[in-house]
Image (cartoon, rainbow, N blue to C red; front, side, top):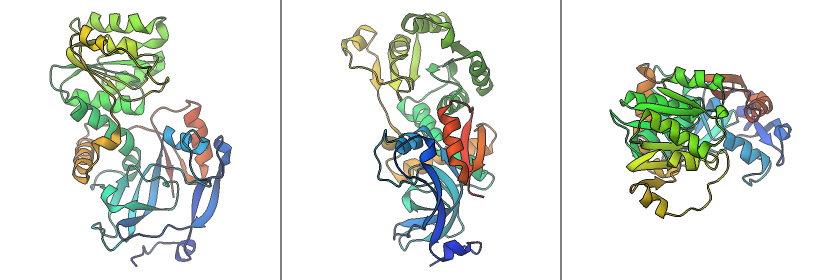
Length: 341
């Protein structure tokens, strides 16, 4: 067994500290407990946590929206240092890695399948590496694969002040596109402009999104959009769909306002043979090669200074309850992370 020389006494005794959701409920069900350290399977590595990213999916699993077995250790992404490697793992002890799909990242030690590890290159801070995977990989597949944005395109991305929206703006600008985005307040408009958006539509000033979004977009680009990326869903879908040019694409990648109801596919015909898709991250990192490609492009952009991943709140791991309350209360801008040390 490979071990890290800095492991504490609890770790040597097979114990660690972790955040557990003791039962489904609000943030106050989260407890800072001593638990068994995870075992290292033959295809896994054990990572000593540097930081865990905090995401809304963590709150859904904590609250019972997504049923889990309780007590449950939340956390879907993070970064840290490999301290133990299984017999089949091809990652060395001491390597810096990040990950996107472990379900127990709010812990001092995390078992991660080696095939899901993302190598963190020199020059990329581990705080950024913890904040990037879920939102960064999502933004990357949207801009590079679901529709490959290119110079001369005009695209729309909803919620441009949010984590995914801000990264989509930056990546689309890197590839030469004009970017229109929506926000929910004047304050968020300033954030979206800071990300590089060319045009910002403040939805708080609109009373009929179905007609006012396409009117505002077509005042900028009369022929319509090459691609519309909608992560809000029910409230904005009809309006963003009406912005797409003939043979363009509507990408519905989330439902922050609720799910879109079934609709008549003939609408796509009438709008000029436009395409529509409902993608999800898992299908776009289905192979290790694709995961590594996406991560390498993101980390290269960060290292070059072309991609900014703002961290709005960094708290100790033991204060996960406060982090969840801030996230659910919409008190933060930028990514929320929990540091193990």
